[in-house]
Image (cartoon, rainbow, N blue to C red; front, side, top):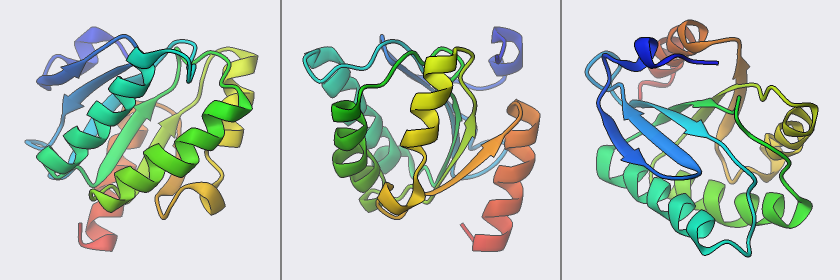
Length: 150
């Protein structure tokens, strides 16, 4: 789990109930950090809005790589997983995201949900890699950006 102190160097550019995005581009161009948390539900209009807002942030800020902390993620039902694959990942990729470096969930249901979510065959072109923590994510993001010329 990432601490507020670890993120204090990065400006927060989006804050909602399900998503929180920090701009890391001053340190690693094209990279942002995101918390994803809560119980995702298609019946919750706030969830849909925030997911769409996060795709807008990808386009607006030129985010190529998300370091995503799923520590607070709860259960993600199959209908939500399908929506994420069909809408969020596809939209994120179309708006410039090429990779998501994911820190695992803490709960067993969150872990199982994340395993299903990070199925690259269903991620609309976004590459998925699991990382241990923020420092591991930053190293991987730098390597990915250098290798992919992001």
